[in-house]
Image (cartoon, rainbow over all chains, first blue to last red; front, top):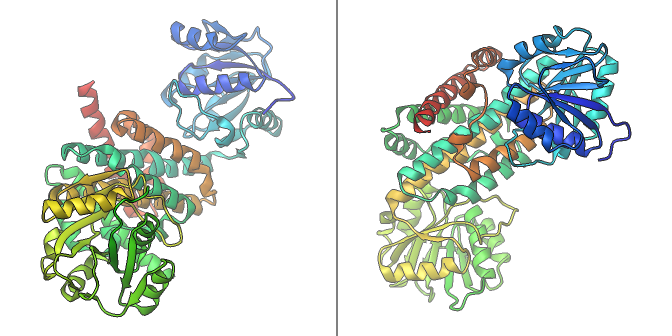
Length: 269
Length: 269
């Protein structure tokens, strides 16, 4: 995508999210002019990969003519960082958190506040194409929201307006689909390792499971011993987990939930 | 793949697994000569798509010179089906179940018994390339195992010998990675629907989560409020689940398990 109205932008934070967003914004033609973060080496490393960006030693941007300051720091650091931030009057200031309200930016004097939440997990070293990453926007007023839409639209085809209540619900759904799923994949891998079986064995099955669950309602395509009501297998599996009492508890609870859901599906169809 | 020594094969069962294996074996050059299943229409439908295959009305193959009979029926049907099966002496007979022992085929008089377990989830109508699907083999003797390896090797690059104990452990790991993961994706989708949010929103995040968890140890790349120890978010999420007491229980147990695991990872690194 190419931007018709390039913006002057600064970053607060130089972690994974800042790293990805700053490079993507610069590539889209915006002027990423400054990077502040507490650690000198991290702000210098990020500024170095963006032509024209300067590392700055304090979060004071009052002397710079900026359109937008993006705060991309861990949730726990948001409140102290916002308290220290200084901007010229009328500068838009956004945070990038899915689980924090817009309101905590109200402490930034003279700022027009917003939220610019990329719904993705970012890792260092692996640059992602943002074109398909949902960017969820919120702002204190319509003018600020339009500015954010313009910037977001230069990065992604999937730009949505979303208030805090919906963003929280989306975040909760993401915890189930991503954080919890990742933990189950970890348990699965641990069980394979303990049996000296190669982790790659499950990959084709996992890929197909995800493909099916994405194309259809996962509840409608549930397979396995729980949904079949295969009690001997359910018991044998729980017996095999006797060295892992918490995993056995997870097994029992998820099997119970699958069976409860299957009853609802039966009534429906 | 092209087979150098085509085998004469019959199928018992005409469900998803039979449908996929029979077509793949015929495509690889084997002679799939007969299909038996209890339902006349299902055996006729499967025989129709395989050139040279005949639907047969009883599981009696004594008059046919077969190398291999593949029993692909639900686990619960395996024992009665094996009891009814008749084959010429020396015919190899396999089942395709991950959670059933080889021994239950001992009732098939004169048969050389084995297991031919494709580690994949099959859906009607969607033909899968079996080349990357692990085929897990077991047999009563080395000669039968070699026959199965030859047949399996004509379908897939991933052929393994695996006894019942390991197959059971693999199946347990697959329940966590696939069946339980699917259920969590169902919960996530339900939560999105209840909030009137589009299910597609989470797809890029899910794809990246799975890609990461496949390339690395999932425990080492865990993200989210539980591993961060973000108690306000954990409490807010559980409060949002008050209409779904079982999902709230799943949320609490998985968060607890993520935190317990994170402590072990910290000690390690």
